[in-house]
Length: 167
Image 1: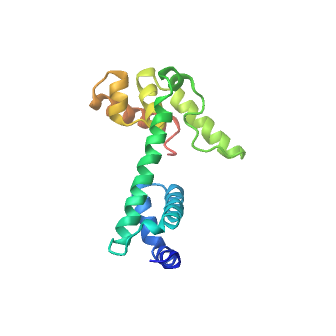
Image 2 (image 1 turned 45 degrees about the horizontal axis):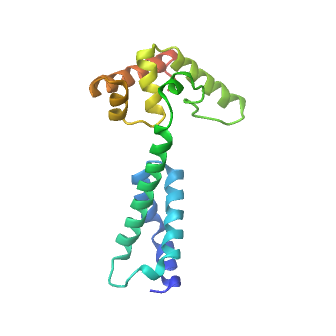
Image 3 (image 1 turned 90 degrees about the vertical axis):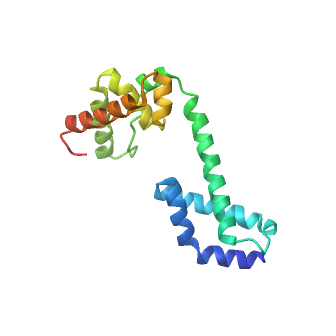
């Protein structure tokens, strides 16, 4: 397969690749970025592809490996933060960082709602928002997995109530 043939295949199957990327990332922007990275990786390594191999499977393997590597990088960054940072970091709940006044007000309202929670709910909720998995929170805090899930659920409901049900 030539580079031009592979390029034509990639363009023709871009939507299918994007759907697979979205399934992995659960985010439109991240899916688009992942597809672009797959395109670059596939085109720069096209000579490694053998014609007897399923091209779609080869591309999906590249995509999956890139996604796993991105997750590992995110895990190492997330693990490097201390527990105290989750209690005091003001930007853990930055859902919108736009310079527009409305966005800043929304972020401030959400931060105030989370700050209003008691510590037993606030810490696991902030850890969850920061990207920790339920099991990681359970292990780090030394509490049962069910308790973690319950506290995060309750924190979410109490924050929504504080915000007046807007969310």
